Image (cartoon, rainbow, N blue to C red; front, side, top):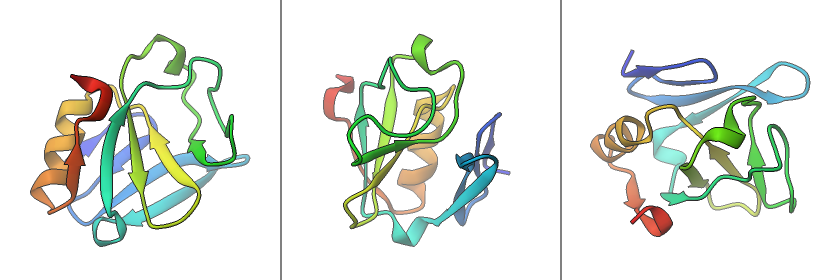
Length: 107
């Protein structure tokens, strides 16, 4: 495993978001499908789902305490957003896989 935590796994070929679909379904995203990963601020109001029907968060009960989110552009209207425990490690893995990373509002 390249990276694994409670709700997110990066295995060198794909990103797996557990608890993405209600109630327990996972979303699998091949690295080649990710156009860009952009660093943003997480929604403090949402531990699962969407505030605006554009950004979709997998379930993460600790999200209100986190300061960094990663928005994944898959070329569609709805963008998965993750809040990993170690965002720098996730971004490094994505960069290594050839995904463009925009540090956005992280700096």
